[in-house]
Amino acid sequence: MHDPRKKRRIITFIVTILLLIVVFFYGLTTGSVKVSYSDVWQTLMGHGDDLSTQLIWNLRLPRMFIAFLVGAALAIAGCLLQGVMRNPLADPGVIGVSAGGGLVAIILTIVLPSLSQFVPLGAFIGAFGTALLIYLVAWDKGVAPLRVILSGVAINAFIGAMTSGIMVLYSNRVQSIISWMTGTLSGKSWYHLNLILPYMIVGFALSIFAIRSSNVLLLGDDAAKLLGYSVEKHRFFIIMLAAFLSGVAVSVAGLIGFVGLVVPHIFRLIIGNDYRYLLPMSAIGGALLVGFADTAARSWFGSIELPVGILLAMIGAPFFLFLLQRGRVAS
Image 1: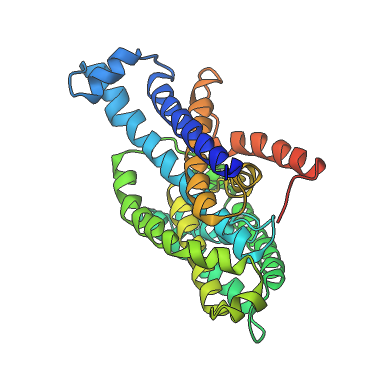
Image 2: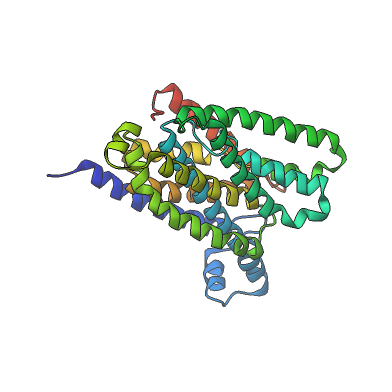
């Protein structure tokens, strides 16, 4: 029997991969200095001139790779959280995981500037620790998804207040952290890529093992238990994995929002809820969205480089409201 969903999934996969390739080369050619596609190809093959090598190999290529990794990590994190919570609003930014990483990064940057080299590690620890705190606060003979969401929102508000207080107390040093707070990939290099790549590989590999658990947990706790699943153990693993991925992303890119909220919804509407397809497609879609947004943020506004987090919020918020208004946001 002909399965229309299978055809739709194949078409969606091919189109998204092609768009990712287009964005990759568009990002390498576009910026304050235009570079032709032939020069890009020559540089990638190791035959470019000094200017092309500096622009493409040392500046744009690592930044594009980081954008792809950050986008994929945030989309996977959001996708996993929405599934395990059975809630369309579950997202690292909404439940406070990203804010926890941001708080530690701010403390290291403007309160203890002598330790600023530990910002990536601190942001990761902050995100991971916040996820653990949310889980512990929500625990009551088990963890209900709604309790996690509510605990996360409350902790997010508390962390936001602490962050604002620190920025007021150290207002003379705030300038150094503003772009990071809004989410930016400016100045990222091979050093930053090498810093996060091992963690990203581990996170992406572990997410493969979360696919089956996510599909089972979508059925509900009672059904999962009947199938022999330890619901709490699998839920804890998925929440910590989402925190791990978002913590690594926050550590290098700052507080980028809406990727984990919007991207999984888009693909859920197109290809359905099956995590065997939804999770990898969300990863590719997240990479595509952040790669495109970062290229636009640094090249569409003249001499001004807009933080990518601002542009993503400008794109993501209206789009999410449109889906909500049309009744297309589904758990």
